[in-house]
Image (cartoon, rainbow, N blue to C red; front, side):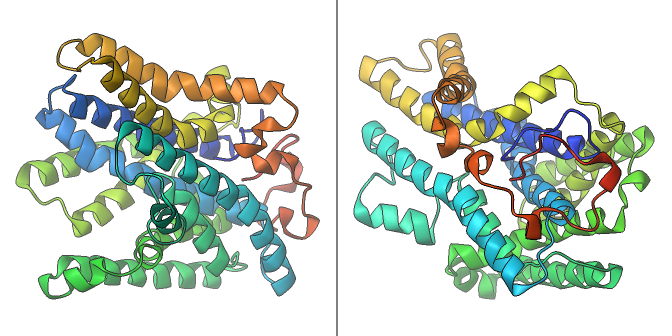
Length: 371
């Protein structure tokens, strides 16, 4: 998510999948803002999107992160771990800290909570991140505790261990006797336990070279039909919960991975996704921020969603999607100003951790800046 996909590489599908996941996250934020304003009715379809499809996108991001981490990193020594962690602190935590501050400031303007003050800022940076920035926070923690795997045995062992952690956290959050105590655990503990298995799944797929087994239109259609049917049945039956999310996320990740690996199996990057992947991080960081500011502006002007739904939909769409693209385009014209969004573009490559042995040497990307 922190770089655009190269023109010709077998990892183009991962970058495109990340971009679509972020688009759906921002779409979910936009729809939620429109529901709150009264511009859109809260229908059954809207509730299904909110409860089933939108929550799938963050696990997708962790899966893609794991795949790219295994393909383009070799973190198996203390020195490599320290170098990698130093780099990821700049790439992940610097934008996380800056945009956490900006979102809290925007909340203050819009009279939302949490507003900007020292207590809320410290809490959002260390204890309870604002969404969706919690992804960056958790991604850093996962990378800090997960070395790249070097053998099939390592990959299977990591996948099994993280699956057991996932089962444990799902059980703890589902059993009435433990749900309250588990929910009181620090955000870092719960988020890592919930998402570690998706990172490990991406790493295992990269190491085991299992992608050719997923490249099939028939498999993509079958997995898609299975996910849609399972999500609709789960939603209509009222079974939404931690266990159902775990199952739906697992099926959904396989579906999206199969679909994108099939569509982009030749590695050729089309113009739409080439452009989209250049702005993925900007959309992720600033979509929600500008929606908050749009809300503040509409309230200050006395506009209501119920009175002008089409106008509200247009304004919120421009705020969520157009404004981030315009800001990044402006920053890109200023010398290194876009480093606040893409720090990795201005960091020197680290030879000790840049490339994993699982990568394909003959098709090394020429302009890929990882993470």
